[in-house]
Each structure stands twice: as C-alpha cells, then as structure tokens.
Image (tube, rainbow, N blue to C red; front, top):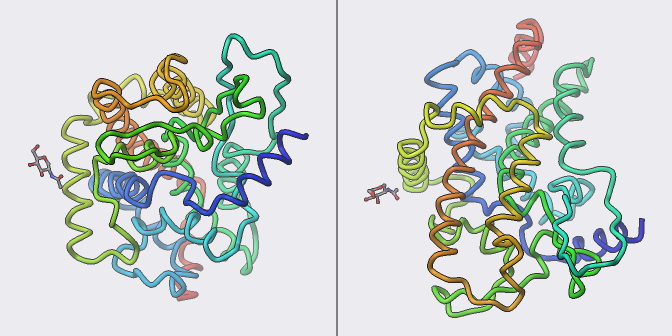
Length: 308
Ligand SMILES: *[C@@H]1O[C@H](CO)[C@@H](O)[C@H](O)[C@H]1NC(C)=O
C-alpha cells in the first residue's frame, strides 16, 4: 500500500504527459483507423457512432476516431486526474542485488481496459451513452499506451527502492539532444523518430504526416509479418509481452544504469521495437473493437445516431 500511495503522490506531481507522446498515440489510432476502414468499415462506423454523442467537446469532427487517442492524456491537463493511475501497470523488473519489499497497485491499465469494454457492452439507459462514449476514447488510448514498454514495467534497485515509475526517475544522457532525459520520456517520444509537434485538432498537414508515418510503419510491419503476435488476443498477455521488452530492450537486460549515455546501438534497437509496437497496437486495437462491437446490437447504434 505504501508503494501505491507513494506512486500516486509522485505521479500526480509529474507535470509531463505520461504516455506515448501525442504522436505515438495518433500513429496507433491512424493504423487502426486505416485497417478498419479497409477491412471492416461496419465496425468503424459503430465505433464512430459511439464516439459521437459527446463529440462536440472534442472539436476535431473530421478525425474523431484518430483524435480520440489523445483525449485521456488531455484531460490530465484539465485537472481531471482520477484515471491517471490506470494508464499503466508496474510489472517489476528487479535488480539482482535488490532485497527490499515490492508491493504493487491492484488497479491498473488492465482494470481500465476491462471496465471500459464492459461499459460499452453492458451499460444500459440514455445516460450510459455518455459513459460508452468516454470509454471508447479510453480503449483507443490504453491499447496504445501498453504497447509502450515502459507503461508495463517498473525497475526496482537499491537506487529505486520504491520503483522508478516506469523509467520516470531513471535518467539517461541522450547525445542527439545533448541533454539528460528521463528514460520514460525517451520511449514516449518514440526515440525522436517522429515529429513531436503533431496535436489535436489535426491540421491537414499533420494528418498527412500521420498517414505517411503509418504507411511507412505498416509497410515494414504488415499484418502478415505479425501473425504469431496477432494470435495473442488478451490485453493482459499484451502487457506481459511489452513488459518483457521493457526488461530486455528499454532496461537493456539491466545493463543500462541511470545516468548512462544512450549508444547508437541502443537507439537503433529502440526505434525498431517502437515501430513494431506501434503497428501491433494499431492492429490489436482494430481487432479488439471488432470483437467488442459485434456484441453491441445495431439498435443501440441507431439510438446513438438518433441522439445526434
Ligand atoms: C517514409 O519513408 C520514406 C523512405 O524511407 C521517407 O523518405 C519518408 O520521409 C517517410 N515518410 C514520413 C512521413 O516520414
């Protein structure tokens, strides 16, 4: 419990955005959007209908599905913080010399995903439409988040006896930027591979850029290159797989230490992993929505559309 409380205190005092950067989230949702548009337009139409009832608050009507991906981070800046601790989970990565006690929060990204899926499936009544609409935005966001390896793991060592908050307390020197950075931020920012200035509402130029990034990523990582990964269907297993990448790549099998300089080799490897994770996040988001929205009857969707 102490670890949980401490984490909450530290997290709520972090002013930075805690997730893939906006660009990482928007690449994931663009890949999912394109995939559904091409292979399952009916599911896309249902998802858009569920997003619509509160769409007037989001001011990006031309890209409602894609832009939904950043809203759960945007609300942190509006002092709406109740969901902050549900954007990640802390699978422990433990230094062999560490002898302290490890306690973990019981609610995490898995709770958020499961409960949002349940709300869309089961919530009844007119007012529940608002809940479904909010939950759709969280699902689009959280499937992206947990594909950022440092959203699924935290490192315990003598230096970080309470954990390093998914690399938020762990500093690295990044030669490309000539500066110290949090390890978490390096990964959030996609190892600097994609423009950091893309924001919602999307300008035409930013939308084109997102489409360009997504096309490049899915060319290297088409569904056919990810067959075995896409057979894994459970959110919890995606988190485990991402946690393994945190240990093996982000913490370099515990060979990376706070204060170290990022090598070219580390940077290259991180960029490859990030592209693969963005592609997987996009396809798995599309697949999750396909499975979920088969369970939502057309009558519910018609009701939503009549509300508009
Ligand atoms: C996509 O890849 C090509 C070839 O590597 C590159 O020239 C182009 O700039 C990339 N597109 C974007 C939007 O990054």
